[in-house]
Length: 199
Image (tube, rainbow, N blue to C red):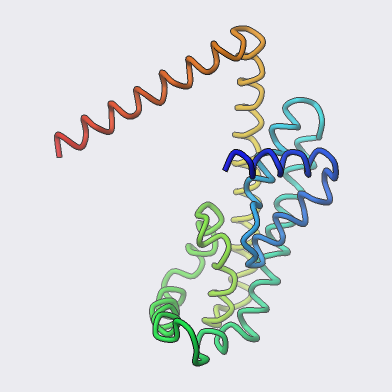
C-alpha cells in the first residue's frame, strides 16, 4: 500500500493534472487503478504548494463523471452479455445480475451517489447501472452529484491533513509525529477491544 502511494505520488508530481484526471477517470470507468489515492496524493501536494487545490478538485470531479459515463455505456452495451455468458464464475455472475437488477431499480440513485465513497462500488457501480438499464438521466444527475461531493470532500480532507502533518513535522519533527500516530492507533485499538468485550 505504501509503495503504491509513493509510486502515485511520484507520477502525480511528474505529470500533474493530466495524470490525475486519467487515473480517476480510469478507476471510475472500471479499471482497478488507484484513483482515490491519486486524488489524496494530489491534494497533499496542493497543501505543500506544488499543485492548486481548486484544479485538483475540479479535475478529479471531471474525471469521476467522465469515467462513470464511460462505464455506464460499457455496462449498457455489453455488461449484461459479460454477466450472462457461459464460462468462469457463470453462476456467481448470474447472481450479481439477479441481485443487482432489483437493487438498482430500488436504490439506483443512492448506489451511484454513495458508490463513489466505497472502493468496490466506485469501480463497478457505473457498469452495474448500465447493465441493469438504470435511466441515463437519473444516472447522470446522481453521478455528477456524487463525483463533485467525493472530489471536494476527499480533496479538502487530504489537503488539511497534509497541512496539519506538515506543521506537526515542522514543530515536533518526524519522531514526534510518529509518537502521536502510535498513541492514536493504540487508543483506537483499546477502544475497539473494550467495545468487543461489552457486546
